[in-house]
Figure 1 (tube, one colour):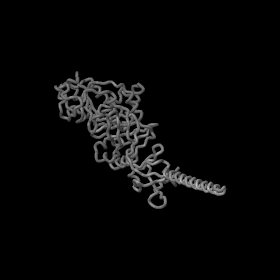
Figure 2: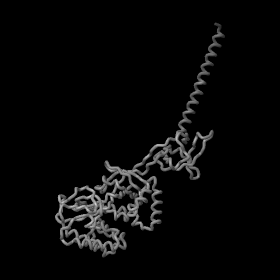
Figure 3: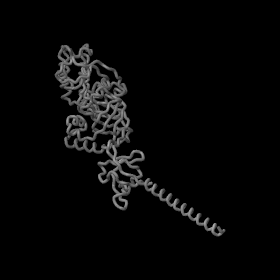
Figure 4: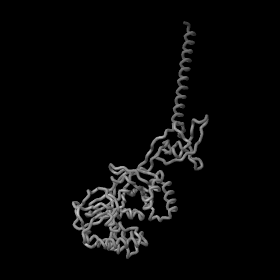
Length: 402
């Protein structure tokens, strides 16, 4: 082979190599571009999304108790933890009420009447808290646990309760039933009660504040023998959370509260009592769930209050209360949002003139912008409730902005 032929052969081989490398380079460029496009596009797929917050819970109950002369648990005709009605004989034999206990209850009512508590319960509760917290005897040395059963009563009801107690203070042995001794008319029976549980009376809920909860926590938690009944119809749960915590349906709850107060003409003080007596209204409220130790319950979210750096969320457990009857305070978790939603990168949402938009790629040959309602942001993700975004569908491609 001549020298010229060998040179031509080398030239053609070099050209083929260059062509191959060029094709390889172009393929690499295409691969990078396609990969980049794929990274900038994702597919909508709805999923169940929940968000929980840790907090401290306070369990407010419809609770009442009495003390009997020389009472022990062995005197009971029913086992502690048993549900009873107003006509069930609670003790094996007739028994007399403890006179010292009755006299103290009458003295508490006399004190409350003397300061015209029925005309301004907010002031009365504040006076008792001040006395309890400072040790200055402005309330006859009474505590929140002492006044709990009477808070919210009008003057006539307080007077009637005093008459009942005075009539029972005759030292006579009598049949002990809930109805005969004017206690909560049905519920679960216990043979003792502590100071915090007595103070966590739902009567105090209208005056809820961080100071009230602190006052309850500071009570000496001594226990006394007493026939105690707790309603098994409902329990109010107050969760203490950081003030920036937002419930998914909190706005809906606030609207319902305002509407029902206006429609029924009730006061803020009567709001909670109205809800547990009107289940048809209660069932319209958004639901959340709480978990304490091994106990979980669904609740209705009925109120929230901002107090300093804390949010106080008021919830109602209806009917399924057995696991919480003996809880007073506890740490746990509450589900603040529980929705079926599209979870997308935060960068997929762009705001134009105050409107949140997402770019959908598949409906036409050109990108389309759709307005979306962002339920909340969770770190670098945006949560789009399916219910609040009916224009979006599973399987659609959307653009993620770099």
